Structure formats: structure tokens, C-alpha cells
Image (cartoon, rainbow, N blue to C red; front, side):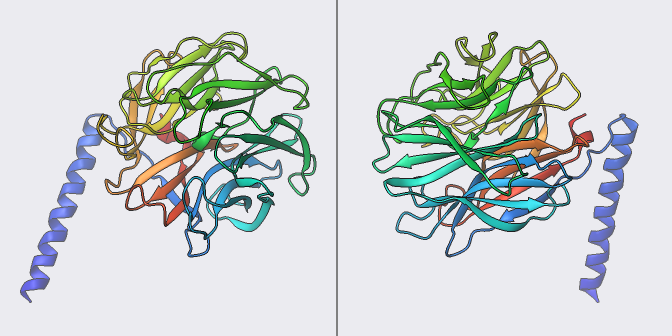
Length: 380
């Protein structure tokens, strides 16, 4: 009987706290943010312990496709250099459920793996799929391009963006291919002259003005320590481009281009604190507001990645990235890791934010691929 009374008292106390919080929000004019839903795209299993680095695109018929890399059970299972292949799934309900798993790109002889896919639906209705073939040794790669004209039923391989690079060129966890307002295709990348895990990295873009048949490389961006990594790019309302970069310098850095990605400015600190992890930069549909997803963690110079990869946070800018305002956290389990981000906006303006989820953090033996479904009004 005593336990029942205590439970009732506790529930009454919780109800009063919730009511007080709601009253305060109303009194101060602060409306509660709409709920964010987190869904599973691909869970870790014994045979496939890690899935991540996803990208989402519309199929033009109400469905969306997600592409991602799936690591297979080997002695290096779950590590960046482990065996992995490129897969896809379909959603009929804007990301709430996913079905029809299908392997799109297999690892080939001489590959360490095939990784880091991205997918784009152009305004002409074609799907562009990219996938990086990391060659054995970790010091060379080939960026493959596949194009579909039948909503992803079949893909035709195009000439690679680069082939058997000297030094490892890659995109890492922020894999992306985008179409600018004038039709130019743009692919951010980073790389160096050595091994993937020890090289000093510079960042830039490859671009194509003939629908992916040929590609040219931009100027490069350099930064201290491990360098400039995992570039994410957005086209601003004035036609210029802004890039955010993973660094070891205390948080994301920003570079700009005024010639459609051909040359880039020196990168400067964004003012947003964080460790060494990727970002995802987007422009809200129908708006000039820019949104940045990143890990707003404490910068720790002695940490192996200069800080934790939690919480998963959002900041917005209404002046093209000159100043930022933090909106809140998407997820904030202090024992977990959230990274390798991509964001797709539905026709209604809601966001599908894909991310790697590991708990405990830095665990590479069981990594889930998840998505946060964020209502459009959350960004207000």
C-alpha cells in the first residue's frame, strides 16, 4: 500500500512539473517544439555489424530511396578499412519505414572496399549515384559514377570522377553530390598524398558542366594539423557557395566560393565549438535560412578525436553564415556517438536526417544506421 501511495505522489509531482513548464512556455510566448521521431534504417547484426554514410533522394513518385554502405563480418568488421558494399532501401512514407534492401555496388578485385555513397535526383529527373572504391593499401581510390533514367531500377556506369588517385582522395562520412541552380554538378572531397589514416588533407570540389561526362578540380583549402576534411556545401541566395569543414581546430570551419566552386577562400572558424567530426550544411527549402547539423561537444585537445560526437545539434544562420544561432539538439545521449550525417528535405519541407549511431561511443562492432524525422516547424 505504501508503494502505491509513493507512486501516486511521484506521478502527481511529475504532472505538476510538466504543467508548470507548459505554463511558463505559454507565459513567455515560447511554443513547445514539435516532436522529432527517430527511426531505424539498418540495424547492426552479427553478419553486418555496421551500416552508415547514407544519402536520400526522391524517386519522383512519392517514394524516396536511401543509399548507404554496409560493412560485412571480417577480421576488420566495422572499421573504415573493412569489407563493405553499397546498398539501398525504399520508403513509401517519407522515411518512417524502409523496405526492399538491394545491393547496388559490390567490392571488386583490388578493392579494400567500396564505400561512402551519395545520390542526387537532378531537375531533369535522373539519379546520380556515386561510390568510392578504396583500393588495397589505403593510399589510392577511384570515385565511380552511376546514372539511372528509370527511377533507380537500373544504373549505367559513367566515366569515374577520378581514377586510382595518388594518395587517398575521399569524402568520408559526408558523402554528397549536388546540382547547382545553373545545372553544374558539384562533388566536395578531401585528400592528401599519403595514407588515409596519416595523410595531411586538403579539401575542394570536382565539378562537371556536361552532366557528369567530364570533371574538373577546384582550388584546394588547407588547414593545420590533420587538415581540411569532409566538406559539406550549400548554394546561398546570392548564388555563392559556402562550405563547412571537419577540423581538429575547435569546431567547423567555413570557406566560400563566388565562381560556382572553381576557387575557394581561406577557411575561417565558424564560431561553433566541437571536436573532430563531420557536419551537414543545408538551406531550408523556400527560405534564405541556412541550417548546420554538427556535434556541439566540448573541444578537448587531448582527446583522440578532439571531443565526443554527442550531442547532435542544429544551428541556423539568417545572414549566410556570418553569425549562427543554436536551435537545439536532435539527440543527446552522453554515452553515444552520432556522426556521418546527411539531410534530405521532403516536398512538405520536413527533414530526413540520417546518421551513424554507436553506443557506447567509438564502438565499431555494432553500428546502426538511423534517421531523425524533423518537422518543418521545428526549424522556426
